[in-house]
Image (cartoon, rainbow, N blue to C red; front, side, top):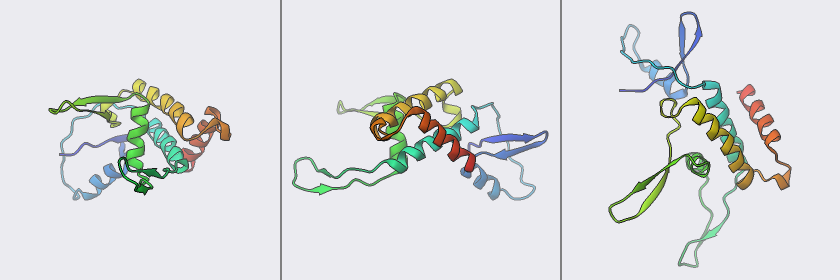
Length: 160
């Protein structure tokens, strides 16, 4: 079973939204019938805008060398986009707190899937994510501002 997002582009045409959606469609054999339940989702353009924002932040993020706790060993952490996305989402306040049998807790980023978050919540996530990136990555002291970030994000999605 697969979840698929499609966008209406003309009176009788739906096209896959993401690369995963396109791959699923490509794997279907001509004439193969699939069954689906449909529901309206949030704005796919805004989804691309959010990921352009994340890409902008990720491109300017450089992990800092740090010392492993309890040792004299230093290392530079791996730069990973998925972890960066989760970190921004948590810092923006969109997370769930999960409890474990040993009493421990973990904070997990909420899903960004179209069906998991309303358009209004996604717009709030975007706005707060800009603030997070300005605080931790795109520092105003280095010439960054909300206006500059928004302008670059628009440029990124218009070239994509």
